[in-house]
Length: 388
Image 1 (cartoon, rainbow, N blue to C red):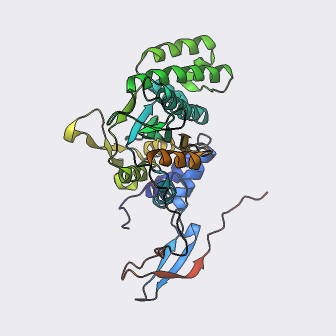
Image 2: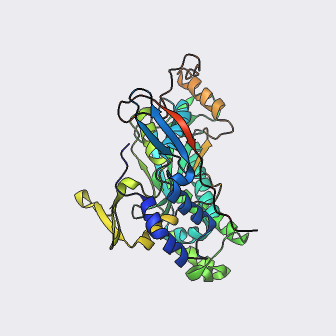
Image 3: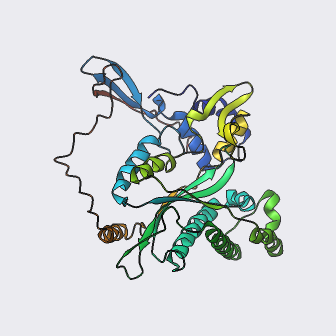
């Protein structure tokens, strides 16, 4: 794989030290860890391997990855492993893509309440889908959904939303038949939007009364119950964006889509254009524009670029891919087996390790394409520790 001319790591290595000093006391431990991991990724600091090709004698050094989930360079293999594990879960039905987005005022307070509000976004989106699908007026079936959290817009702004991948049908309440949705139509988005808005606000009020929300800066007045109630009034009336895209063209298309979305980070190295005295330039998509004017280039000061990138660091241990309904981890295998029986399709054959094809080598020679062998382990540098 050809290394991009500019990487997020280059920006952090060049401007990160001065910016960390300037922002001392304002960056969380999680953000500092992400910066450090990206700066050290695939460098001698993390150690690596000395490799040799027995076919042509080519030698090279491969440094270790940081494996941080926010690092643009470390997601490809993680995504591939996840997809291989999920491939057996696909059913031979239409799959739909549904997106639930939070309004801007709630997005603003979500930044200082990430774990609480992101979790609520997941739960209310899943509850909305399963509730409307179970209604006999719509589908009348128990469905499954895989939800993926994205917290960014194309310009790296804070824009929390979840992408839902949903099979086009479900198991009837009596468990005796598979109910298929109307071809090309899953569930009415207006109904989804109304229920999502009502349930999210109800649960948000419960979190407020339980003292689980924190307010800072311009939002500090919302700590007063009266002010919070008045703040909610326009949110009960405005439109909440929920939309469904057209169905995928078969299970293969679902996998291709998931590979682009499940392990995506705020910005990929491929979108970076330049870093110079003017700042950092990158490509972005303006969804308000139409046609050829949608794709644009934006230049931000390096400090602002790093600030926006670190807006999207998730709380430690927070899962950004979750499964609900038929696909919930607790009963996934039994539910999928039942669905395949109702659809009259065979179960996927288990992989026989003895007869499996020989796996591709981890390291491949760039000169002749042969497998490269590890001839030496390069130990990682010991971090400098302060005296006790």
